[in-house]
Length: 480
Image 1 (cartoon, one colour):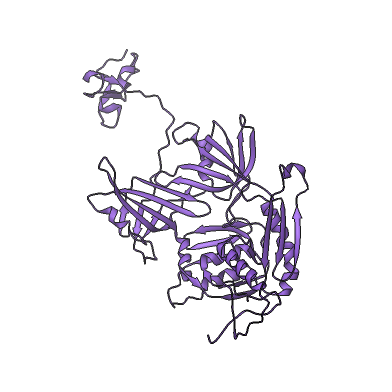
Image 2 (tube, rainbow, N blue to C red):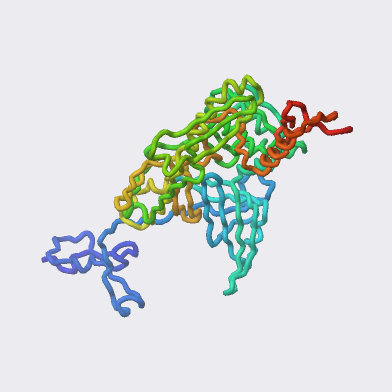
């Protein structure tokens, strides 16, 4: 048996917790040295201050939240976004929601350092956002700021922001016509705008792309650039179709939303989701539609399936407006077919709240849940509610401070950011106040039997001339 004298001992702060340990023994050591290798520690807060054994069992590492970029506020006229800006914020919360629009809400305390003062209207904030689970900051502009004090004395400023894409809503485009252009060329013409004030068109900062190669024509009667691109009537997305994708000062309108995936996810209740809401909306549903245009075409379409008609037909009337007889002859039937397809199906959507998997051992198996993007297709399954459906993500609500996806909504993408089948020209439902006033005025004029002596035709807001039932122009008396 080796003696203690024959054993070489060393002490190293990095080995054996700083206690002595045997090395290079001159003879085999026969006695058990387990206790020597056991790491002991002292702490006044553990084991009443007496020595205790530290566990040496290796545990599976727990993933920690990544440290993401902070929120940075920039001046309203900034365009480089490479500096630390006016302030780096540490807000109480920052929630973004991407869908038909792309908005953010920031809540910040009234702090002694004055960081909250940077949340002024028109300033720009770089907010952490994610694409496919990877950090991809986006720029938002503040359009509203509310400062308040609660009953318990807490003082906060809440800022409401829109994605920088909506700067295009500040630019005005005068009346113009685009003829036989593919998607990208048409968008670039719109971005140039025809501003009344030279040099202030925000469209010059943007680049755009479209994979739509079909050549179409459109006449704009004067609108903002945003309305010209994605408006509900007589817009690019109305005529060429496509789905909108926004990425800071770049955007695209493609047949399928840029970077979107099919079969991207499968969500099952009690595993990946905690809440599920199904919303079936028949408010704009129609089974019998009468259509006409401003060049004399008319048609009727209706559903024949009895199950769709209960308890009765839902009747609607729509009018298409064209710039020429030739355009009306070639486009009316297809436009009506596409319109009827869009209103003869109810809107069905699903709201899904995701489970917080960040601190579970299964997290590594569900990383894809944090990588959902608007436009992705996937499956939602809930056995008790008998719901198993393949849907498209139409909105995504995210905590920008943690990267956690709070909620996704699946269903039909809103018409303002997508239209699978385009219409050739504008649609009038006759339901707006302006259309009702115009119809009433025209009705009164049609009842006139006298011939008016006039010099200047009366034009409506959409550029059409008022006429009597006899086909005579209605004109202003006197000079201009």
